Length: 568
Ligand SMILES: NC(=O)C1=CN([C@@H]2O[C@H](COP(=O)(O)OP(=O)(O)OC[C@H]3O[C@@H](n4cnc5c(N)ncnc54)[C@H](O)[C@@H]3O)[C@@H](O)[C@H]2O)[C@@H](O)CC1
Ligand SMILES: Nc1ncnc2c1ncn2[C@@H]1O[C@H](COP(=O)(O)OP(=O)(O)O)[C@@H](O)[C@H]1O
Ligand SMILES: [K+]
Image (cartoon, rainbow, N blue to C red; front, side, top):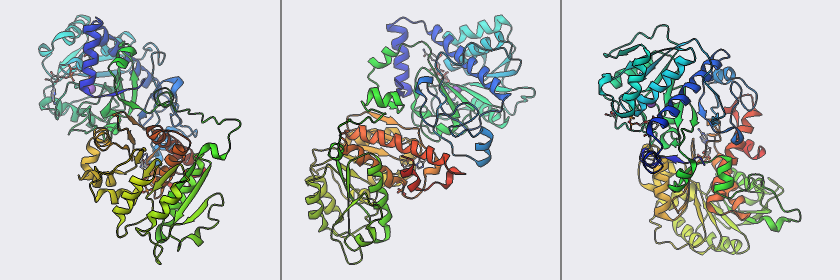
């Protein structure tokens, strides 16, 4: 169910399918090539109706998550052109392709050129060429390496194409005249590539990008690091990537996600059971994964005889005089996440101005300084309050204060409830080595990339270089549930499981959006979800709320954090 694999994991799965099950590799290649041809035919049909310029990821029809755009228009009914004109809230929506869609290759009359590499990715392209021709497309092949250098199944496909008389040329370098061509198939490099594209491969990728033609990439865009999402120079900028068998990590991490365009995930005949048996631990956060893999009820059904005590009580320790809004957003979001009660603890000096800011909240004086800042002494009061609450969320808007790290250590070790640590509390954590801190209840850390960099002691660029890999390692090494925020948030559990979310959009990069997420995670923990369930579900719902909020505005970039709470 939507595992996300590394190239090595994919190779192992291919090996098991061919060697252990005996599925001939040429059959997998045939299925792959046919799937690519089907997607090209579907794209060519859409072109007549205006092409989707935005990208996104695609899943299956029964799996249509919120934010999954129908072709040509989005959840709010805006057309591609509308979104493009705005430079767009690119939703994480996936246009899903399973075997049922888009059906057999439909007749078309366009001229497409297939760029052929010398590995199995090239073989996939050769099969696609054959199916396109069969459907009436005019197709020619452009080999990036001498055709004689192809081996194995790819060589078999080369010979079939030659026997059918498919026109072929060998690329000699430099620019290329693609006149009359409607689109290109990138079958140059797949999961077997290593390092930046070399020699003629690099030149051909650059020429393909410069052509301005739509490019359909086989499996991954050539030049993409399939594991990390890094793009080499050059890297194919695809309109559609037909991802074969299983999602590759690099397709869900930026900048790779951007280079891939819209991702159509297609089965090529490797049985799902085989993937299950491999014990793959990273998954795309689709509704079915939430439900069946994480055991979350996306419908959030409540017991008919439930009462506010049933749904838990959150204690939020957040906000200070200059940043009281962070606490308010966090506390209100916890309520909207469905918990029964929320107590917002804040410095006493700020408390009067918070009265009636949200009538549903209970307020608690946590002491603090005359200037409305937090002080280390407030730990006693917070621990007393936490004794009768179900969850403690700390950090949004608390600022820095003397003894802060020791304050956090006391909450970490002595609060016998699940703990959510965000914002300034993460910066406190980054100042110390907390490996020796004792904690038996779950803890969820919610860093954005800058906070993650401080926690891990590396540069932000290094965090972004391989978000999935870093999140998995950090969560396991530190025994925490980690929510690495940003486009395609990664949620990693201490046991090695990880999930990648694709709901949401860049309009959510607005002050306070993270405070809302922290409150939501706390609110779900209070209702009995465990650390990874609460973190993953909250991230998913938070992105969905962002999409809904954007739909209510003229422009997605106008949304503010409160809109997210209202859209829950
Ligand atoms: N059973 C399988 O293994 C299947 C594999 N499939 C396809 O096969 C692909 C993987 O195929 P391969 O493992 O043959 O590898 P690739 O087709 O990705 O390419 C490997 C070839 O490219 C060359 N190369 C590697 N890095 C390069 C670079 N940086 N610059 C220039 N040339 C470079 C290598 O010398 C090698 O000849 C998948 O992405 C998928 O498209 C599909 O056909 C389905 C079945
Ligand atoms: N490009 C994006 N796509 C999807 N979600 C995003 C994007 N940018 C930011 N977000 C989400 O918005 C929230 C911002 O949180 P954060 O950076 O902590 O802001 P703040 O500290 O102001 O509350 C996170 O949940 C993040 O994942
Ligand atoms: K490719």
